[in-house]
Amino acid sequence: MVLAAGLGTRMRPLTDDRPKALVEVNGKALIDHMLDRLADAGVTTAVVNVHAFADRLEAHLANRTAAPKIVISDERGELLETGGGVKKARALLGDDPIYVANIDAVWTEDGLPALDALSAAYDPATMDACLLLAPLERSLGFDGPGDMFLDKGLARFRGEAPSAPYAFAGVHITRPSVVDGEPDGPFSLSKLWRIMAAQGRLGAVVLDGFWMHVGDPRARGAAQQRLEAQP
Image 1 (tube, rainbow, N blue to C red):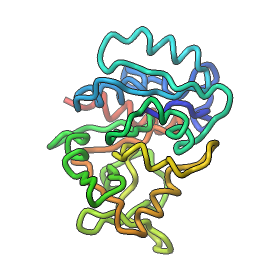
Image 2: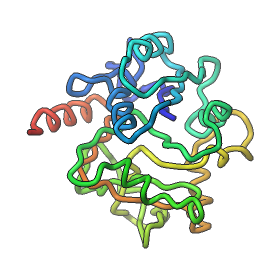
Image 3: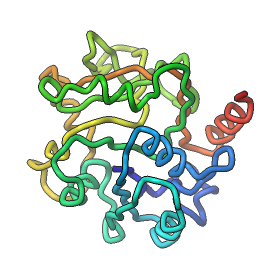
Image 4: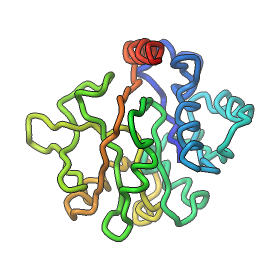
């Protein structure tokens, strides 16, 4: 599932006439960066939620000729945040583990492809979710002291610590059923992750590459420069 329904307020004025998903970096819309990564990982169908400028985003997706096949989850009536978006799309997602991806994450890869590494690290017997993490020293566009610690393949939230070495890189694997006990309406998946972490069931793997969080125009410009400089 690709989470593309957000308002993109921090990306204004670039989102005055389009959803954040259609802001371009290095000549490609953010959502296409993510969909192409998912296709490379073998994903054949992606559920995409829409809200802001939904008609324009749907038209863009309808014009894609490359994999994956797109199925729309319509949130025009109410913006549901990450968890609520997955809950609304629940019937479209089936019961097998899925990637859940933000559209403001772009990265380069030095070793094993990130989504392949994430899939290899995910153990459904011991994990309820597995997050892709980025080392802060190999990232741009992320403002803050870090999100997570990592210990023997399990993620732990920063809590009261002044800093942590990793940021959530915008993609994780989980079973869609993790939202089944939640009420309909807006809620964040991070609420569920904190429960998983406390139970020792929140896995994580570190990106072998450079991560760019494209959350505002300045970060978009920095990501553009870095990608243009890639050989």
